[in-house]
Structures are given as structure tokens and as C-alpha cells.
Image 1: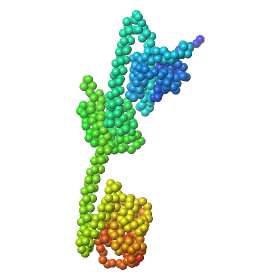
Image 2: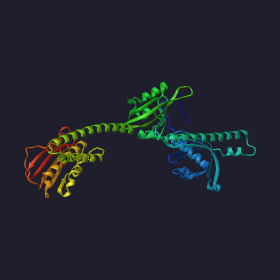
Image 3: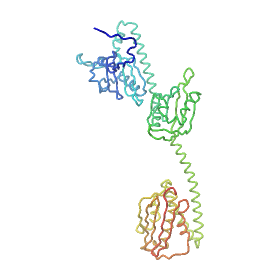
Image 4: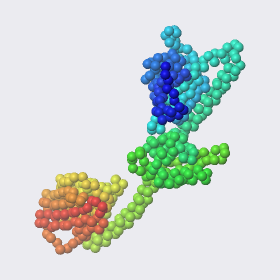
Length: 494
């Protein structure tokens, strides 16, 4: 048989054979299996099937605790270990765990107690979360049986005793660690542990996940997990704390955060502390971040200041309005009783509009409510309202309330509402550019005579919508009844 000779390095450029990892997994001499996050089997090698006396077809897709139920200590230990891996993303070991498994039918069936030593390793998915758990387990039942024999070998006994001691210590430490982790996860404020000079996310709690829109990225640097922080100076601030080993306290610091990588930044206000974590050698091992989202508090304080400023402004305006009403009413009242009646009526109209606005926290009022409030005392059969829903700002509602009160008072004294068959019709519509157009028309009253005298009521009607409101009201004295045409912008002019 003729064989080709090759010089050293002749195949350096040739393609290397691909490793068949599935075949490698199957050929491993130690038992291995893989579980998904619901603790269902997704893979098991031949050694694992042999150790558990189960066929692969029986295992795949079934739950671990469905096939191997164990409510005793061994089952609790195994479940706790797997849950720690899923929760922390870190490997977990069980030095010695008692766990019974079902025997194959050819061996008589039933359950047989076994002793195992297991290592659970997380397998991460592309999102940085634990996707699967890899278990490597070793059956140490024979070793324990020898340790319990009448004349055990000294080395095996000591080895088993050390394993049991390590297992008890690990269980105690794991319980304390999980208790502390549960406290951190449930804390109302956000908590983050960053490690190393790149500030790698080592631990994050639920409040942090809520703050950043569920982007944990445990195992990634803060720059990778929250890239929007770089331009805001917060990563430089972490570098500063690492270098100086001095804590930093932030108060109501403005931070722009994204709920997802494609979402726009949302402004949040945070109180936080950056505390350096020092190692035994005095170097900075990481940073502990603790804080709370105070956005709602800042918004409430801002709103409170706005309301106080608005209240001061409204009180001044109201006092000025009352002063003007008093002066004008006194000027056109023939005697004190007449002044009192007219003044009280106008003050009550102002108060009624204030009550209507108070019900909406001074955000405004609906036009139909303002009209009904002034006309309803005269009876529903005496007036008609026609128009759609129109929301008025507080200044517009106050001005229209006073205006409509004057129109209704005039109609009751001299116009349509002074006669039994008289009626008031009010119709409105929205014109282009968000302009309210309203027409007040009286019918069925006494004949109207045009007067050259302009009283306070007429002047208030014609002037009430001017100024900041940029509106207008025009009176027309038709023989069959008074008409008032009103135009009022509802946009930025209010």
C-alpha cells in the first residue's frame, strides 16, 4: 500500500475538521443533562441515561420533578440549587445529596435511594438571561455504602465526612445568601452591584428592572446595558468613584432613560448613592448603587408651586373683578337697596362659576354647564341650548360665566325672560382654527328699543372677552329681541 509523505506544516492552510459537539456531549463518560427554565429535559447523554436507568425518549420534554418526584430533603435541596442558578446566573454545587430514583422494570421496579454529587452550570441566552441549566452529576452511593460498612477504609470515610460537612456549610451559606438576595430584590428602592473598572452588572433588583424597562444585562458593562448614560456623564461619575474611593450622593438628579433600545428617552429624577466596594488589598472592587425614583415627588412639588402661583394670580384677579363690579354697580344704582341687589347678584354669578371650576380643580369647564348654570333658574322650558361639547379653560369659563349672567339678568329684567312666552336660544359651533362662535338670541319678549345709554352690563358684555382672551362680543338690538354674537379663540390665546 502506497502512502503519501507530508512535510511538517504542509497542512497548515487546510481546513480544520469541525467538532461535532452533539457527538462529544453524547460520548462524555460522566452523566450530563440539560434543563430549560421550566426544569424540563432538553438533552441527556448516554451516561446520564445509564445512571438514572431511563431512556432518552422518556426524558426529553418531561419535567425533572415529574419523572423524579421527591418531597423530602433531597428534592428540596435539588430544586433550591436549580432555582439559585436561574435567579443568579451563577454555578451552584451540591457536594452530597440523597435522592431516590425509580428502578427499571427488569430490576423489579420500585424506588432505590442513591447519593449524588452535582454541579449546576448556567447556559446564557442571547438576551443575557439564563436559558438553560447544565447538570453534571456523579453517583457516589457506593462510596457512602463503603463509609457506612463495619470496617470502612479511613480515607473514604474522611472524604465522605468532608463532603457532608461542605454540603451542610454550603446549604447554610446558600440559605443566608438567598435570604439576603430576596431582601434586595424586594427592596422598594433600586439596588445595583457593579464590579471591576468597566462597571459590570453583577446584581440588580426588581426596582432597577422597572426603572430601566426590564433591561438587566447581568454580566454586561453598564455602558453596554445603558448606553444613554454615557453622554449624561454618569459613567464618568462611576469612574470618579472608582478612582477616588469616595462615595457620591445625588439629589433629584435628572436622568434620561429608555424603556427599550428603540424607545425615546424619558426624563426621571433620582436620589442615589454610589458607594465604592473595597477589597482586602484596599483596591476598588466595584460600586454599590442604591437609590429611589423621586420623579413623582418632583412633579408634585412643581405642581404645588404652580398652583400656589396660580392661586395668587387668581386671588388678585378676583379682587380686581370684585372691585370693578362694586364701583360700576354703585355708579349706576339709584339707591343702596338697588345697589345691594345688583351687586349681590353679580357676586353670586362669579361665585357660581368659581364653584363650577373648583369641581374640576380649575382645569376648566364645559360650555353647556356654564350656560345651564345661569339659565336653569328660569325654567328648562324658557331656553334652548344647541351645540357640541366644548371644553373651556378656566379664564374663558370665568369670562363667559359673567357675560352670560349679565345677558340672563338683562333678559329677566327687560327682555325675553320678562314675559311669560319669551324664550332664549343659544347656539354654538367651532369654526376653523379652534374658534368658538356663539349666538344668543331672545324671542317672545317686549319690543326692543335701541338705547344710547350704555350701562355696566352692556360694557361688561362687550369688553369681558378682550385682552388676554382675544375674543369679542357684539350686541344687536333687534326689534323682536336682543342678540349677542360671541367669538372666542380656544387655542393658545387663552
